[in-house]
Length: 259
Image (cartoon, rainbow, N blue to C red; front, side, top):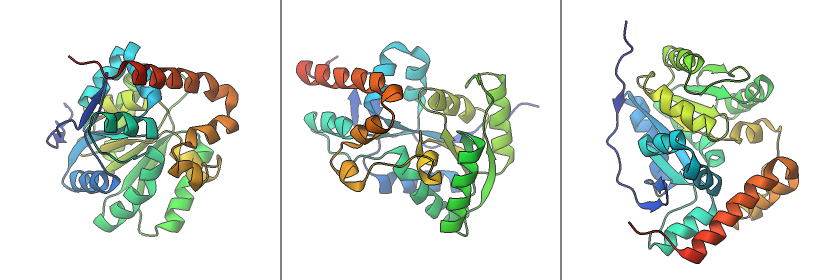
């Protein structure tokens, strides 16, 4: 039997476009309200958080661009994206995946919306789930799983996972696979999971579990959280941040491309 056609919320107009990237939600409060309303009313969707690394990847990855173009909600993840938007005369707030999990879980528990955790390792996911339940006693975690190694985010295993997520009854699924895999999975899963809003959250569960320590507040408030992360994982993140910084400097020098 064919999968039910997912309901979708009305697409919001873009607030700003940056090369192949886009942002259409200005604040965390707006995003949380929209996601909870969509999940409670049975509308599926996907939430991405645009950062410099994504902008670099969007240049060369057609599947990533397709996923971004179809995303229901996109926020600005990172001070450079906020800065670029302001240079275009648009005022938006920084809203990261790491900042979304707890507020969305709190709002979901109040609204009677259950959640699902997908991605990262079993240990990290289980530790994060335990801490979320302890902090938010009424939170219902309807399911939790990690994909196998070599997981194709748009393949048969992804379709099966989307089916299990939908069957769990969850209204929100937090996807912690890293970019672009998590966005590709969310884009494909929306087509298979009626009523589920997929939130791409990167390393958020690592921070919640305590496996990795998030940057101190001073770094977060000054937009230099990337410096902290680079100090923690220089070998893994060094090249990524070098490419991102080159993109940012190049963008500032040339300015936005006008169509």
